Image 1 (cartoon, rainbow, N blue to C red):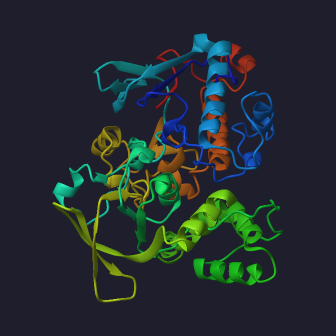
Image 2: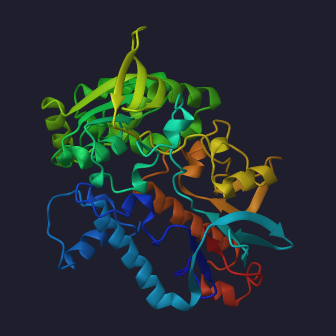
Image 3: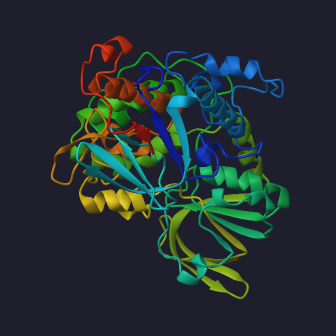
Length: 443
């Protein structure tokens, strides 16, 4: 936006203590690695080598493979923000705070902070990232209030926690991060999820996606993928499938999308969201050494007692239940998946006002292909947009940097075009409506 026109002003509102990091990259743990190779993690869609060049300029960085730490990537993002501040600081404002409401006032939008302070703008972009952690069912209120239960593993430094017996709810990437961080204290760890599936590992050597193009229903997709994986490395097959994901998702109706989520999403997640090879080796060693046990099953209940938290679960495929006592239980189920269940005040207010509505699957907000929010009445909210995970009901894959950098670039171009500011020359000629009500800003 700032590069597109000298007339654009942007206000960036962030509720966390540090800008540009989010929960994912605000970490100093050297074991927290990106799960995408650095060659595909440039923040700039038209400059794929930008991150690699930035790393080469950092005297404190030593080349250690294709998967850098998330903390390093956070510093990279922060450097981009600092550059924007230094070169366009007069048109970029940073505000610490939380927006809790947005409403239409005459010809512009008004966002209100928790402090009550208003911010007026011509355009609002909701870039909220992932929602708060999902709350697993069956957990007693006393457990939720106990120090033995960690609802959000990113809210504390899990490395400082000492426990002998630990239950991790979830077996995805978050579980791996937590298990590896706890390892130095030597606890016995059980990781439990409905299917008991672990993320697969990246190959040690990168290879391009297979020259494949997929089509058809979710069931047909499964058959095509399995057939191709018999003759080609499954990672190359899946990378080709990922490149087709948005087109496939857009072509499916609601019934097919629900069928995919119900039957294939667990398989999609563990093959799509992979581990860096070094992390995969650590997990394998922990399992082989008896430090980590991964099981499939459903939690029946968690209750708090004098000795710790008693967990009862039903193993997958069995009718009998198992019970064990844990010093610590950590919720590793990942972000909330149903927007109606969100506890975020802004999301609640937008739904209550009818400015936003859940998509038919309930994954996020209903949005147009241009990312404009669709109201509860089915009307398009002009100049009110969402990006990232809140749009996955429409686009499906919208969580990784390769997807987000393209989506945000396309949205910036769209907004500049709507405002008649696609070029400064165009702005000087007066095309489109002027931006006099306020400044475009991102939440």
